[in-house]
Image (cartoon, rainbow, N blue to C red; front, side, top):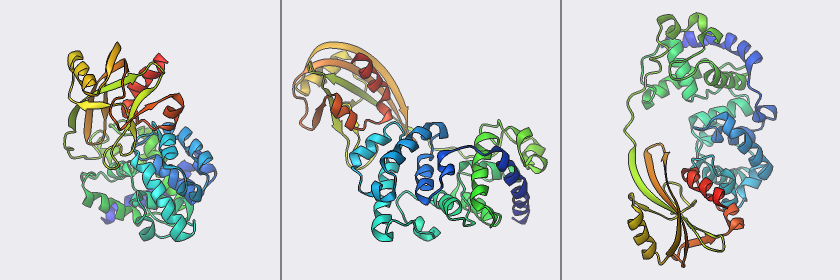
Length: 353
């Protein structure tokens, strides 16, 4: 362990010097606050920076303070989040905002223990807030940092195992500098995002650690970090119905309050892959009469543990449908958050309007 810590400590000075000349210009870095740091880090979970940028700006315009977020209309929040994915993040943000407002008077707690008790705040996010917004020497270890540490030290430990992630975090806790800890953690984020890239394609000649990186010296960039096999995703088949009435309204229904895509709106759908005759029978079971079958299409969406294979029908119809449906006109659709899992169907609908 002493060897790994020594190698990581050697990185500090060249890393900060590299960051001073290569840091990314990001809106949450120009104007730093605990709230902005927190929102940006939650948005960046499993989401690319380029995708987050417009969402962050719109979010800050709509909810400029933690108090504003705490009292926001949840439906409006989810609609603003539409397309960013992993909607539980938005719900956790609001739950945590209410706690911060009610329990802490709108001021962010400044201890690791208190922060990690907030909904949706784990080790990494707490470390980012404490180091960036409060200047505390706390590590922020995410996938980028795990990759850098694995390659730099030549570690063959499986980074998907919790005990190994905890070990890496322990190493980093010993080397985060007391001077500029926020810059240090952000430098690691940028190094992993722009230089020490995944899939065995790092730009080693641009790396401030090139002279003492074990992976580069041993030619192990392609094999590090070690990641054990994940359980295969469960495959589910769905038939999705984009149903249009003569007045332009489209059928939507709200998903359950808990579980996958909780409380979001979706197009009516059933399990399985239905051919046109079976789809017509399903419409009849809903009390609908189809007048024109516009299109059949297919789509897929990959969640963390589930793969949706979808067959879709765009149909002009009339009838009331199920009692829990909303026949949404254009104004209502602007208020209803439909997740990106149904993006292809939404685009098809917009193309027909």
